[in-house]
Amino acid sequence: MNIEQIKQIPIGQENRFGGGITLAIKTKKECKEFKKNLWIHKVLLSDGADDILADVNVGPRYNPLTSPDITIIVAWLKDSDHLNKPIKMLYIDQFRINSQTEPDFDADWKAPDWDAINRGKVRHGLVCAYIRAGKTIDKTEIGKLVEYIMNGQLSAEEKKRREQIVRETGENDPRK
Image 1 (spheres, one colour):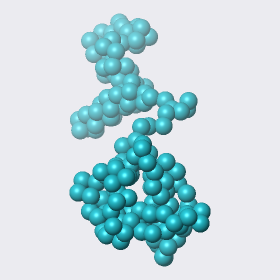
Image 2 (cartoon, rainbow, N blue to C red):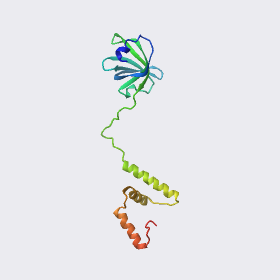
Image 3 (cartoon, helix red, strand yellow):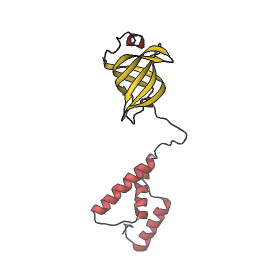
Image 4 (cartoon, rainbow, N blue to C red):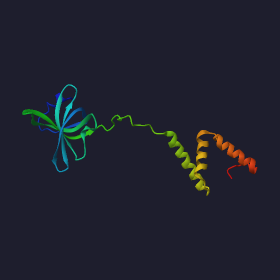
């Protein structure tokens, strides 16, 4: 159904549009409190070929312009006047707004640092394992183990430190 067909509906007849009719919101004209906690937003709707003014029955904190379009579920036509001219105006009682809009990317947006997130997950797992085993570990040792798990190898500094411990103590496990 398009706007031309909507304008042919008898005045005052409530219409339930099954799955709905989606129309573009061209402009928000005004917003007035009709009753306590009931706001009416006057908008200009378009189907590309024709336009129609509409009153949208919304709650106190709801803005129908969060999406470029509106899907009308229940509405009816009413007589009104706009700029001192009689017109048919649509009154929208039930509707749906598409909430899946394109993200508004700006220059400040940065992708998540997945490497840091994954390192945090590994660190968490190691700390939990040490706690379950009844052992304690300091931050530097955890950091070195995280690096080893993430990179698959020890840093050159850590290799030298461990080799030094093995030479000095003769023990094969430098973590002791």
